[in-house]
Each structure stands twice: as C-alpha cells, then as structure tokens.
Amino acid sequence: MKNSNKWLLSIKERKFRGIRICLSAIVIVGVFLSYEFLTARSRVESEIKDIYFSLKQASAEKQDLDSTKREELIRKLISKEPSYRWEAASELARWKDQKSVNAIIDAMRDTKGTIRTCVMAESLGRIGDRKAIPALIQAMNQPVNQDLRICATQAIGEMRDKRALSPLIEKIRHSEDEFFTAEALGKLGDKKALPILDEAAKKSKDPLIQAAIHRAIVMIQIQNEKDLVSAFIEALNNEDDQIRFWALKNLALKRDSKAIEPIANTLQTSNSKDIKIYAAATLAYYGKGTRPFLEKAKLTDDKITLWAAEYAIKLLNKKS
Image (cartoon, one colour):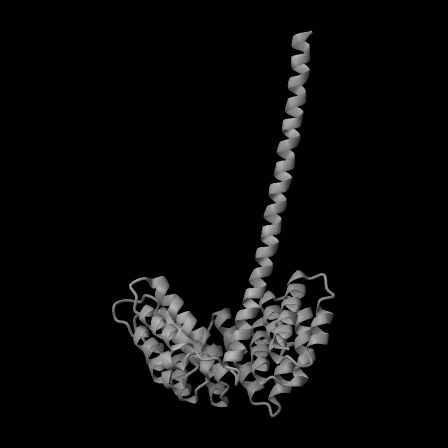
C-alpha cells in the first residue's frame, strides 16, 4: 500500500514538474518574443533618429561639433584599431563636420594598408565638402584597392560635383566598376552622360549592370525636368525601389510642402522597410503640416509603419 502511494505520488510529482517546465518554457518564449519586439522597434526608432539628425545637419538647422570631441575623433582616425577608425569617420560624417575633412582625406590616403580607407571615402561623401573632390577622384582611380575605388565613386555620386563628370565618363567608357560608376553618373544628373550610358548598356552583357545603367538614365532624365519637385514626386511611384528611395531622399532635402501627402502615402504603401523609415524621418523633418498624415499612418496593421509614424510624432512633439 505504501509502495502504491509512493508510486502515485511519484506520478503526481512528475506531472507537476512537467507543468512547471511547460510554464517556464512559455515564460521564456514570451520574454524572448517581447525582447525581439522591443529590439525591432528600437532599431526602427534609432534609424529614424539618425536620418532626422542627418537631414537637420544638411540644413540651416545644422549643429556644430564640439572642438574637443572633434580633436578626439581625428586622433582615432589614425588609431591602430580598425574599429576606432571606422567609428571616428562615421561620427564625423554624422555631424557633417567640414573642419575634419583634411584629416579624413589623409586617413583615406593611408599607405599602411587598406584598413577602413573605404569608410573614409564614404564619410567624405556624407559630409559633402567639395574640397574633397580632387582626392576622391584620385581614389576613384586607385589601381590596387577596388573597395576604395568603389566607395570613392559612390561618394562622388552623393556630392554631385560636375568636376567628376569627365573622370566618371572615362571610367564607364573603359568598363571600370560599371555598376557603381553608372550609379554615380545617374546621381550627377548631367545629360552629357546619356550617350555614353547608352553605349555602355549595349556593350555590357551583365543584367545587373544593364539595370544600373537604365536606372542612371532615368535619374538623369528626372533631374532635367523643369519642375524638379513634381518629377521627384512622380518618381515615388517608379517600379524600381532604388529610384523611389533616391527620389524620397531628394524630396527630403527640398522640404516642399506639396511633397508631404505623396511622402505620407509612400510611408503607408511601400513594401520597403528602408523607404518607410526614411519617409517617416522626412515627415518629422518637414514638421509643419505633417501631423495629420502621421496620425493617419498609425491606423495600420503594419508594425513598421505604426512604429515609424509614432516615433516621427514624438520628434514633432520635441520640436513644438
């Protein structure tokens, strides 16, 4: 009898132990999902915050970097630790700090190796100071370091300096880094590049390069329209995600009120997370007149749209 009771007790204990394990597993899964939810949301918010700050730094609302902080970052540009060099260049670019341009050019020309020279070129493009153009053109034609060549080419495209037109045309004529060279020519927007791009498209058999060239031609055509804002608004409906994103970036800098509703529609209808995030940051940067559209965007089942709209409203509240 005693053995029977012990046996029953043992079964009960095993059942309770099993229940406790199941409950613990449920709690762990719940915590994990909550963490993932919060992490995903915080990433969206962080990206919007960075874009918003970058847009302000490109405008009259620009803030100056503290001189002590600048000196510290410039010292890190020549650190033996690659991560320090990357962080310093990225932070200087985030502030669009023109006073650090010469130091970044020197770091990009570092002959000790290729450590983070690509990041230096990217940072110069993001800062946008035109005095970096000669150094970037030189880097764009660097014979050994392909990464640096590509990053310098992309930086030149971001800066849209006409001095780069001839060197870029020469590059694509000689089939050098065609994908990125075509992209840079598209951003430059000069019609003189159109015949060369047509020629390059016929010569190339690579579908990715052909797509990049076609994209560049469309971008040049858009930039030569009389009403640029309307042309960029229309481009928000282009079938190519990269053209839509590019048009959105241009509209962000234009800060034209007639673009508010189309940008808000892009936030709600785009399938691209990156485009949604940039659209929300742009609406926050525009400020006046965007709140009703952001409130409307909150009425959605799409999490990215909801989180982006809510955080953009938070930024609006801080401005008011």
